[in-house]
Image (cartoon, protein in one colour):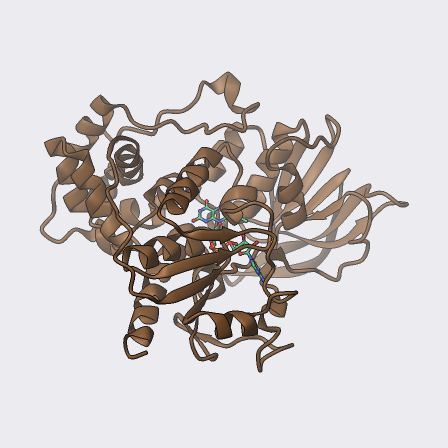
Length: 428
Ligand SMILES: Cc1cc2nc3c(=O)[nH]c(=O)nc-3n(C[C@H](O)[C@H](O)[C@H](O)COP(=O)(O)OP(=O)(O)OC[C@H]3O[C@@H](n4cnc5c(N)ncnc54)[C@H](O)[C@@H]3O)c2cc1C
């Protein structure tokens, strides 16, 4: 049978902002790796958006060479300490494992995490090629690109708008899923290899993209889509209604308290919505997630959903918000009910009002278009095709460039962007 990821003691889980999933022990890892069939055509690798060599790294676990296993993972994924905690393995490597048909897929994500905890990485700064690349944004795409460029001998400087580095991995995904020490470790390593980081440097204000284009040989935009998309519903300005970005930025570490035993509603069905609800539970609220479709359609990771249910979060399906009601403060959220007609979810005339002191809107994300300031595209959106933008010498990676907004896709696209930058600078 598949060995499940060990978890923190049940009683501690709900109070904890520390990681609740614990890594495999040596014995568990060896036993789980030993179940791998070492398929001739490993479908798990096709299922991985970064195409990590799962078969080969699992073989190295069996042989007890964890450094080699990490080297194999790093060939395609420079930051497995993140992906092995937050990937949706059920749709990726493990979902494609041949043993999944019998419900016994190899626990590839847990094995990847084991390797990051037991193997040593030996990557080195490459011999300087004299070329300078500016990276805007320090999330997983920015960090992965900085690492890959550094290995190839480029001088890299990362510009970050916020006071803290790490993007959504720092302020968005809460510590009970991704311990912040993992982000700190990666940043420490990058700084040691002479990657320069500049915080509180929002490109588009004093320093613009136009300036970076003049001062660097190439620019990589890795600015993510870390801003909520505003919705024009009645009462959205009321006290108690939050957008997911401002909510997570101030509450993800648990240092802020809303007051205990409040009733909270989170609107949405992705990882962001579930994390907002789990944070609300941890700060003492009763939390309900309202989603417009049914549970099988929820785009969040399966493990997130399971943990949320175990933590007592309620789920209400087939509801779309219509208005936020109350005198000055939020008192109720009015929803329209949806029904299924010929496999589509359609709105009905039926309404439901749910009492709530707090509502978090976790639907929609966007990027800040002021990034184009100082260029010929000021005031406009920058068109992106793959990892290239319409601006000469400016590339893009991560959520900004990807349809699939995940950490592993961000890392994979950063590697591709680095290849494009390398080709672009070959002739310069
Ligand atoms: C709550 C939540 C939970 C999630 N859970 C998961 C999960 O379980 N699994 C998963 O795979 N993915 C998850 N995601 C998605 C994942 O976090 C993103 O896909 C990923 O972080 C995108 O990486 P990025 O580097 O492109 O952008 P980001 O992580 O958003 O980083 C972009 C950085 O650029 C900076 N920036 C923006 N504009 C400027 C500017 N003009 N100048 C300078 N700096 C700028 C930002 O401040 C930020 O630090 C989640 C997202 C959220 C919000």
